[in-house]
Image 1 (tube, rainbow, N blue to C red):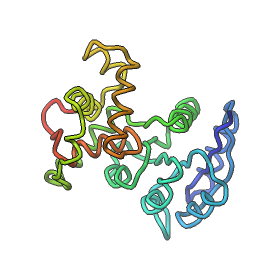
Image 2: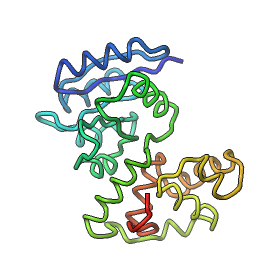
Image 3: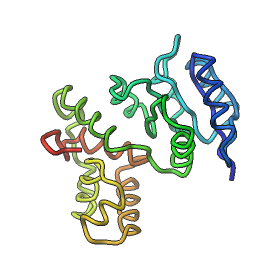
Image 4: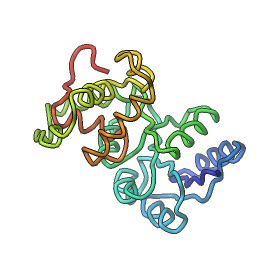
Length: 219
């Protein structure tokens, strides 16, 4: 199945470069382009792409607001120029499914698109560490209510904690000495019980409710 991608960046050269890189990858089609947030929202509604590659810093409506408006119906990968980007936390809260550096290789770009299109979150441990650092800077839980966490079993709570520390399903399976499929089932149950869309939202939720707190060794 072909993954259809919308490119949103205010720099024409960047859009052209990504279009060439993605167009050369099997199973990926560049469905359209947008030069700012307003156009990204309109084009996403018009083209119904599987994934949007969204730049953050754009004139008019920025990538955060555009992500907020379309993430409920379209998966968004936020593009960042620098590994340490002050918009990481805001973009995750806005509903981004993950992050990708603009300097990523063609292979990494294609893999990111496929991963997110398949319904997984693109949240590497390095991104999780930045999330933790930003959360610590903000000074604590922003939504301290934890009622929904009571819906989780003890094992699901344990899995969510490990997810929030940046571990992959395989790493969690090794830590808990269970099959990776079992971990996937737990993650699916966690998302359903907490009414969350993906793994990225689960990480944000874990920190915002105070289930996991920034500290030495986290991430």
